[in-house]
Image 1 (cartoon, rainbow, N blue to C red):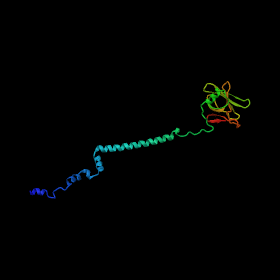
Image 2: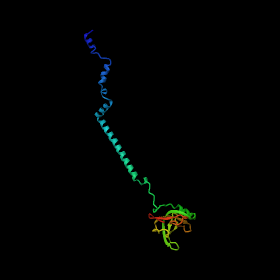
Image 3: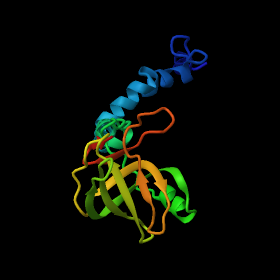
Image 4: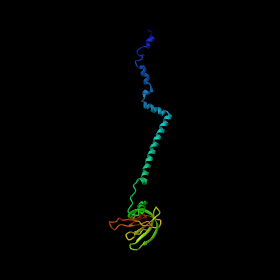
Length: 208
């Protein structure tokens, strides 16, 4: 055998089984460091990758700030919104503000007598007080159907109402029909358990 050829095939020079595939794998960059470290290094080395990373951070921070501000504004608006809070109940001296004239119009059309009504209307005309017998404050109210109703307010049992023509009052009393449109009386507190009391609300005060 040729010495040169035998020298090249000495055990020290021969490749061990698997050596041919192990050496290149050990020298491969993926084998030296974990994949995540390689990805970070590649991202840092690429200028466009760094810009995208920073841009994504800004977007996330902006979204968080917008959500926080929106939540604060929504909470404050709910606290300041009067509709979200329960309205306080009106006291006994406050006007009921009942603009529905269904009861008085129905009683008028049915020619009812001694029917309790509760409604609001505008003062059409002030009349002289009736001083015969028990004193009564008298005035006419204009209804939605164009007719008028007389109010006879007993000023012996209740204070006189300081109204003017054009004022709106809310009345609870007893209606009695007549050909002129009818009369509402007993607009004061009751002095007997056999009859329900009434009142007149005007200007935030109750006259009964």
